[in-house]
Image (cartoon, rainbow, N blue to C red; front, side):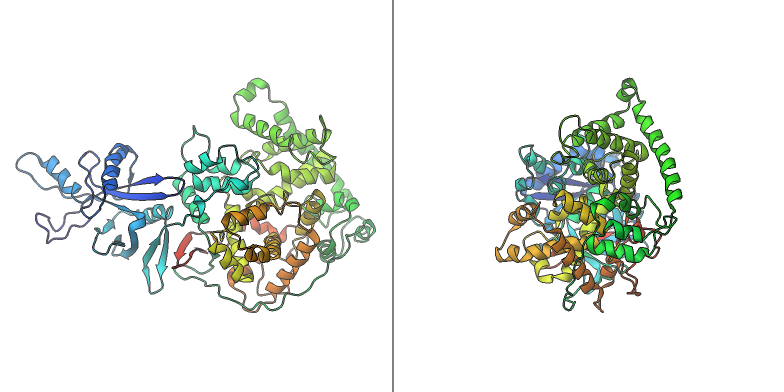
Amino acid sequence: IHPSSDEDGIEQDLLVSGLCHSCITNTCTHLSLYFTLVFDQDSSSVVEWAQCPGERSHQLLETQQSYETEWDMVNAVSFKRKPCPNGEGSLNHSHERSRWAFTFSVSDLRSITVKEEGWTFLIFKLKESSTTLPTLHFHQGGSREFLDSLRRFALLSETPDDETCLIVSTPNKALSQSFENLLDDNNFGLVHKFKKDPYVTTLGGFSKVTNYIFDAFRGTEEQHQRPPEEVADLLGEVIPGLEINQQEEPGFEVITRIDLGTRPQVTRREPLSADDWTKHQDPEGRMIQIPHLRQVIFKGGLCHAVRKEAWKFLLGYFPWDSTLEERKALQRNKTDEYFRMKLQWKSVSEEQERRNSRLRDYRSLIEKDVNRTDRTNRFYEGIDNPGLVLLHDILMTYCMYDFDLGYVQGMSDLLSPILYVMENEVDAFWCFVSFMDQMHQNFEEQMQGMKTQLIQLSTLLRLLDLAFWNYLESQDSGYLYFCFRWLLIRFKRELSFQDVLRLWEVMWTGLPCQNFHLLVCCAILDSEKQKIMEENYGFNEILKHINELSMKLDIEEILQKAEGISLQIKSCKDLPDSVSSILGFTSDVSGSEPSNPGSPWAPRATQRQDACSNGHGHLRETSSHNSCKVAFIS
């Protein structure tokens, strides 16, 4: 703090250094954050800012004294000591700094002005206009970290006429509502978890697949708390009304109502037969007319007799231009490689495993999940089923293949249909590896892939149906977390087993656009919007309704509508750049085919890299009077 020179006893060049500490009070229905600035680590005379009212603030300051060892340094600017003839300079100096200490609640904060003058300084304004706070000067950096910390619990949005002024608004109470109806096993302490960490429990509840979502952010009770930047990202995603922005700071791309025109009618065709598949091979076994073949698969899928061979091409295990002999040689090499990795975990003794907690945990999770994966399917039903043994062994071997990721609950859902089709341990493993290359970020600890997809889905829905998107936002559902499970395991729990096979092979063609699975989500929501809006469903009713769609969806109808949506968007002349980037539409609108026909993942290969490509920067929060919005900065 730079004390003003006109104050009594204050030298003009005196700089008062300080520490910032945040104190959070959290209940199931209310969350408050208090920022306290203090100026003496060794002093017990921490006093609050003169205008900070209320007995609660006094109690908070007394409590904060016990947290001195946990304070984070915000500003390390040295101050000029004043000579004290009475020998009590240290005490007097401590009192001099303590007079500047203050506390404020984020909920009482109106705005923050960010100024540059060789260094950054912040000017705070409270909603109570008669109360003023001192300006904080960050001579040695730290202002960005301070604002990032504040963004964990509040929305900071630039004012239209002054980009240096950030308006502060606190999150709504959507997350304080009941989430019991999200889980089948809601007697496992959901309310208790929600009280401890409502934001993480929200993710865990919406996934309805695994406790991994909860563990990924919190970790075990013995572990340290997750890093603040992860909390900041998570809380940023929880805010309703997500929007992608492709412009550089500080500009925003405003998606307004755009006339998309009439949605074209499309038709589906019969699945590709074994004879038709054979016709697309030359005498040496190379696949020919690959763009046409992928188009046929997209329009109708595959008959089951063809899937065992065709999936290897669609997933990238077999190159499209490989001969039959080259594929046989590839399988021999891949077989050797697979069993070498399998031997690694098979040869681990019990004594070794006792000293390898990660491998032990992976094995435990896999055994639990295997015993409850698709047990109603004849391929996996019964006791001591050989299909279960293969499922277990492939997942354990994948831990050797990618030990950093290892096994995460939900991955067994992705492997099960592949093993069912391949009926071969080695082929199923390498097809699963190719699938996981696309899905990897869904299961990584920071889950950046899931965050990005939800933001992208919200952007698409807002473009397609602004009225429905506004309705969801008005019901605190604009952040679309009820679609979490759809995206996490690609609708595996929403469709019948055979429908999952059809959907996946259609999506693996890479047609008609990038991120086609997001348009599948939009198609489902489009079919359900009338009921949701006519019945005036609220927050809980929307969640319950979406969950109850499981096993009731018509896959052919959904694919037909999703393709129509794709064509409708692509034909729009004034398509926002953010939407073009999500769907992979470039200025060459004719390029609906992947750029490299030899690479079946061409339209999606960038997705793992680009899971953040529409926002490899920062989340910027904006707000309005009636709603909260988050823009994703390019």
